[in-house]
Amino acid sequence: MKILSWNVNGIRAVSKKDAWQEVFSLSPDIVAIQETKATPEQLSETIINPKGYFSCFDSSKIRKGYSGVAIYSKVKPEKIEYGLGSDHMDMEGRLLTVHFKDVIVMNCYFPNGGKSEDHFLYKLEYYDLFLKRAKMLEKKKPVIFMGDINATVADIDLARPKENAGKLGCTEDERMRLAKFTDAFVDTFRYKHGDVSKYTWWDMKTRARERNVGWRIDYIFVSHSLQKNIYNADILDNVLGSDHCPVLLDIRI
Picture 1 (cartoon, rainbow, N blue to C red):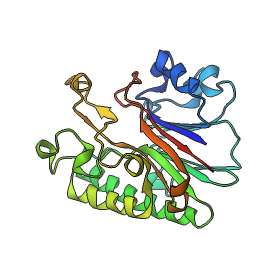
Picture 2: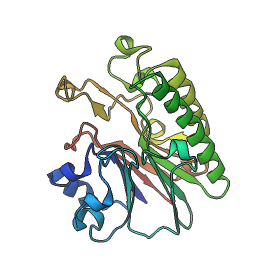
Picture 3: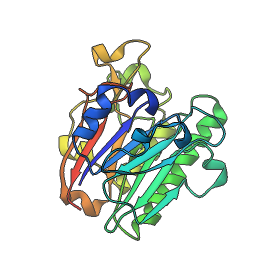
Picture 4: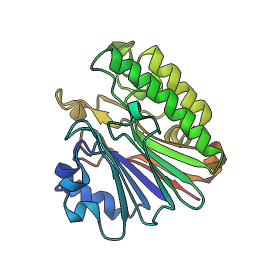
């Protein structure tokens, strides 16, 4: 099974670019999209139903053009779930969970947390509730979860750790929670590539991509029971079209 995850920073804009066709030309079995910034009603038929794929969407209920996730899959899921099951956490369209015969796949756009102290606390609570949910689902079947986690797991995951120490995305509170992620599940890129430094997000305002001053904040995690089945995990930093690049997992299910 080939799985691709990408924060597109607006699905309507990126679908008009070559990168959109480039991603689907790889023929992934699952394409997980974050930050769609649109409701299905705002999307064209070609975006909603690309040839050969079933699709599902979750979008923000409180703010148009914000957040949102989508999953495209070659096989129709047996079951689709929206959100974490908590009203106060599920208004922004951040999580889709799809159940297949042998695996459960979760696609999440985690909160940024930078707007205010309250939003930062919301982010931390989201991490806690998400991990609890993933562990609960894992009791049924192996879990693969992916998305923009909006923080770095360790200093190796950004180009300039000293300058960003303690700042949003590198705080002790965030790292502590993400350490629980890496204890409970396998960070597929790190498992395959060890201490290699590659990044998935670059600040467009400072043209950081040209200098590769980036952060690795887009991940694919799998249950430990699937670790031996991982063929490859990669960061497709040659794919343009967004301030993030796609991440890829090839795994036997």
